[in-house]
Length: 457
Image 1 (cartoon, rainbow, N blue to C red):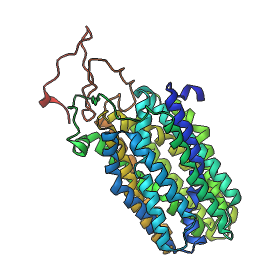
Image 2 (image 1 turned 180 degrees about the vertical axis):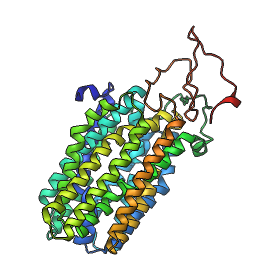
Image 3 (image 1 turned 90 degrees about the vertical axis):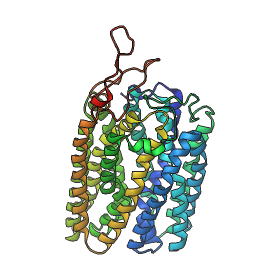
Image 4 (image 1 turned 135 degrees about the vertical axis):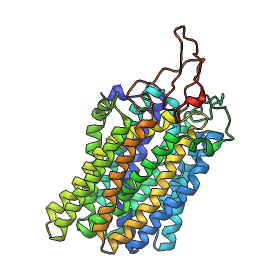
């Protein structure tokens, strides 16, 4: 099953190797930022929430520029320097001792990460055909979480609040891990460069003058972004601050339990992802996205139950609630990880692919601001119940938005029908038209286009 999920491209397989190597480093630190700054360096919970929100603001401001640079100069020239910047920022976190030094280190790390994710997705999408993208993005996410889980278990075995050097070690290790995918990309000099032809994937003119205006005219993609913004704000953006703050302050579990929760999350993803990929074949992507919102909401209910147990001094049920939250959340991730990037790139044109992928980074930036600056003060101020109500409601709202998106997509874009193989002489249809695909007559020649006035918008 694993071999079936591997891409045909040898270059894509090497990119995936870099993904899992850097993920091990990311796993070392992912669940511990709040704990490190709050309990080791002594920064107030509200201040930590604002600092993490600042990271989201920096990423939000720089993500559009990153997408434009990727389209203009190629992902390679953008991603390689950012690996070095991200490594420097992460290493700097090991030596923070005040709010100001933490702000400087987090700012540097945010600059590095602003276009890394979208740039890497653009590279991976360019190396595989459309029919393989959902499978490859799912495999990439599996390897990402495998690496994160390994890193999380290693960190859980060594971190100790009373010994700051243990946290310094994991941040330095995380920094070093960013250099591995950079070295792999350097070894493939032709990967990640700007397409030479500049030919778009649809009938839109081969021009960049429209820029983000062109992307925002894609009504289906705008709806996808609204869904993603709602879901990430009430889902992923809550992990580093909301989840960890609730677990330590309300459920009253130790940092090691958080590490084991991450391990449980990883085991669920690694064990289930390939089965989920098979389940998703020829099934509606929008319905899968709706399922993600329901699962994320359920995970927060499980965490709330752990919080109630922790408040009554029931240590084991509290720990099980924290771990159970991460496991249920992982089930939702197995649906989201292959579908969201595959749908994004199904709607994108080659000419604007960098900007389409950057828009997904922008929504992460917005949610990265809203999530932490609401979670930190609410939980730190004794209003954990309000926080639970907000994130559960937001996840369910995202499910509704996903269902409503379905009518804007063609069956091919929604995954209910196989994507047509590209024809050498025929353009691929505009992503924002839900009706017409490549219209071909019985002789294989292009059929007449319908009157634009009759097109459904």
